[in-house]
Length: 283
Length: 339
Image 1 (cartoon, rainbow over the protein chains, first blue to last red):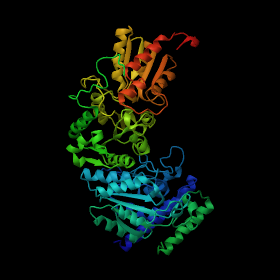
Image 2 (cartoon, rainbow over the protein chains, first blue to last red):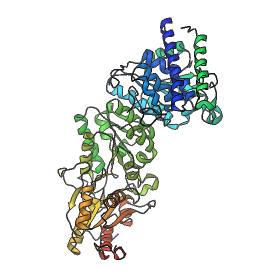
Image 3 (cartoon, rainbow over the protein chains, first blue to last red):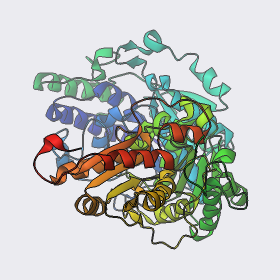
Image 4 (cartoon, one colour):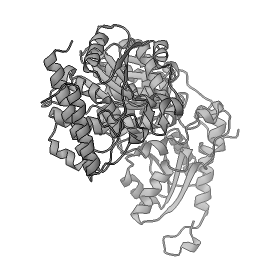
């Protein structure tokens, strides 16, 4: 259970990173802001409360792992790694530019703290299952976290990995589904529906939890609950809002990817601040 | 089927010897002791690919993903990222095509230490038909940055290739046959080295550059041609297609002036293309012919029938060499009268 102090600190961190996402998007000339914002609170919770990682030793073989299967959400992830302290935030100024380590999709060989190169959808969960099995085979206690997008679940390889994780009773892996309900061409349920989602995962042998993916208390509870479940993989269906915190982007399909100018940037910053005031952050 | 060559034929299988696939299965078991981080993976082909021998010895270090090749290679990538040394075995058609993107993006892009042993390469799964043939795999795999591509001549060389691949840092694709192919080598001590071709016959009139099962056939053809046609035929076992041995190719260009490549693969993108690249870039021409599948899907039949039909056996190679040798070839600038 989160303490009030922890809760406030996590909100502040998330707010700082959301501002950084907007600044980076401005400089980068465009980004997948919608999906970056929808998953952001979950990733903040993982990196700033639960994951056993050392920014000074990013390749520690015993560290917890994180796989951003929806790699296009790098805009919500790379500024977070900078905020965590894996590298200098100034490097974000060159996002998308020639020979920058950062582009639209994360390159693990170039980004300290990033555990997997992703971007082609449907690749992350198999890799995460491999990492979890790698821990088991080597009798290591590290934990693997993975986030997939909801539209991404159209890719069959996810379900191959789902079968394997259940068959091998993988319980050192926690999967989040960023259920923001939009994909490039429109609402997920209109383009290629995935419901009944919870039933699908249950049928595949997974334990299913459902939460509000922007509620820090619920995210924290889900993680702690998942770790108590043995001999079965756990998936958290996190109901989120695409573009969360930026009023003109929220729940809008078109903000899957987009560019903003400085006026829109100002509006975005103001909207972020307003949301956090409403959540009780006055500082 | 007529056979000009006596001795080893496709139909004679020495049951006392282990098959190509069995040898690699056993080698993996031995290497399991040497490499405690070695893990085996397959997709419902533990028996067919013989990686099941490793599973029997190390069940806790073996993962069978079921019939799910994309997942197979994704999991291998994840395991490699935790410090394990995954050896993945499935049929070449599925490793190179069904899972091509996982191999390229998860394994090669991240430059992971995953070793792929692709069985049933080329047309070796003959009667199974085109769905189970892999006559494009070398072209696909060699176009992936960071990937090393090896096509061993036989089971003995497969053992060498597997050992060498574990010492090599980065992804390796080892393409073998179905496992029933006759062997060329009698022992492993001939100096196998990744990227270093092996000259199996010396010669000055023409060089045959072969990979995989065609090495034995080319050697038999060379012996036959020496005896019956008085030809001095060099045979190179180009077991590593990438990185290719440029030195061996250029030596053949200057010393024999004629090159014939023989591959159990489409002539587009495989061994012949790799050799042609080297020759073209050198600016030094020579007579050059590729033998393989001519941009076509293979027929159904027994392996020996297909190898004969596509001129990949000794008879076919002899026919091709005679064709080339019968043509005028000069080392001048008059291209009109050359091969």
